[in-house]
Length: 239
Length: 239
DNA sequence: CCCTTTAATAGTCACAGCGACTATTAAAGG
DNA sequence: CCTTTAATAGTCGCTGTGACTATTAAAGGG
Image (tube, rainbow over all chains, first blue to last red; front, side):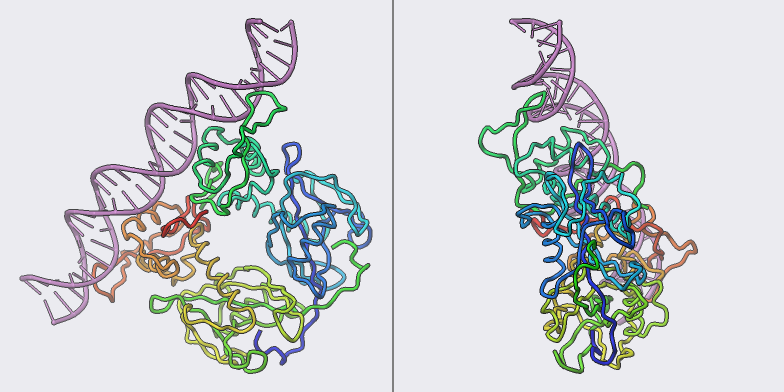
């Protein structure tokens, strides 16, 4: 950033794009909006918008998150910067640099049009195809990041309501990773990690389903997982 | 990014900032440039510059890397996008959004002025203080990222020349992490990880120092480390 | 009311990985 | 030739984890 005044510089439009994830009916869902105009009119896209003069990309992302989900309080939601996409031709009209974020929601409020009056809809991740711009790439990157962060962070609780059972937490992993996890082993691992979850003191139990009712837990104070909870290796992810 | 044409948008200047690391004399060094003008005239800063109209942030970062280090071929160097800094007041003159990158160099060519004619210097990481703008924050974030990635990636070889000994590789970890590692255990772990390093077939050995000469290795084809090489926990990094 | 089903919870066993440690080998240098 | 230095070889024991079995506590149907 030296030599600042010695070069002319091109002004860029700066936007944020959000990959907003939630779990619904045992499947990973992402919030998409339908574009109303060219380019890509009628195509689905990630929600997002311009960064305003007086706000950071993080502020813009949280503002857009509230507008698009209709949630009144998005202050506690997990929002994470992914990376910035800046290919010169990523928008056919003009030079747009976009800062991508991932957001995780515990439950999915029904989607509705945001302030942009654009149609918004929760879509199963596997059905999100043919997105506008490079949003397909952004969405795939976001999913990879979320899956990876489950291994070494307590991110999974961000998909859960304030109080949850270990079964629900395990389903987060199973859904995002697409693998089954051994129930007792998962329980042992989670409870052995200090600060991951803490038991709700009262003899709180959740009923409503079949089977033995499970104890309730809250997210703990830890953010990192040491040692990590490695996902089962289908074969050799390494190499 | 929907509702594209419905809002006026503020044009931003977009720059890249680089945290270029290398190992010198057993210490982590970072490439800094001295600012020649206000603001922060005379202060040290991370190298960087404006993204040009026809290039992506990645292209701009690699171009700047070549200009600032004086290296003729930077195509093989490890360059990694960190995150984007976009606080409205991060530059007192105007609205500048900066995409930060980390770069890793095997050996340190003597620093010289880049094309900007600014003075450039390799500085021990611990001596890099009072940087211009928010570059201190960016540098700290970059160091954190590099340290963390050593755990679960083969990034360490990016600090090494094409052929290196296991002792040199171990010193990378020890220098970046600031901890001593058990020699035999490190060797066992590295050699047990397929694709991390591969032996140079010839009875190649490195002489020049004291002691038994070590075998030479090259970086393997793996990029990820499974299971990871966790850094010794001084106590509880988790929680 | 019993019996099946479902899911949480408790517990066992064996192996892999790793920290800590000791021993040996192969060079340089005085 | 002996000391120093560093690479390499190998051992021991603990911890974490995968695989697996058993028990408990509810719902639901006959």
